[in-house]
Image (cartoon, rainbow, N blue to C red; front, top):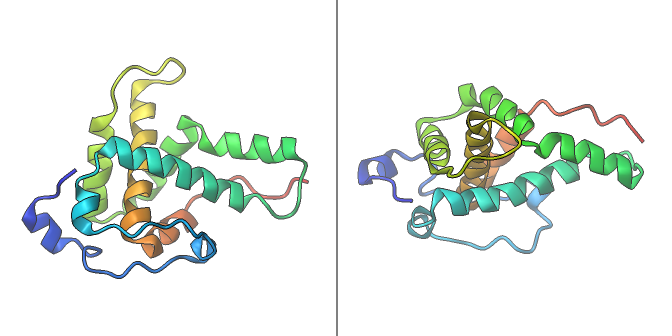
Length: 159
């Protein structure tokens, strides 16, 4: 995925040094990539990565207080479903800058095939969120953490 030269120069995170948010600080597997390398990744590749990062965030969110594994599973599955991801994207959209909106657009346009379980529009929105998360994970983890904190997740009260 390539941003035009003028988009890159206006990109607020193009020259930032990546700073790990609190919940990423203990992860040993952050791979430093250049902006050029990130731009070469397809929206599908970014969504693939974003899916994993998003699920890890959701799993981490529900760790405390300790629960039974069935409860962990139920809480996490409820948040990683396409319908929930689509809702989260819609709630985050007003907080996104132009570069992030462009990444979301490219993620939406990259979805192919017809999912069996959900409407194509919902699937596109979920993929767009995953694409944005993958992009921000690689380029600006501080901004990613800021946006993830905006998510309205199911209360973490069950045990």
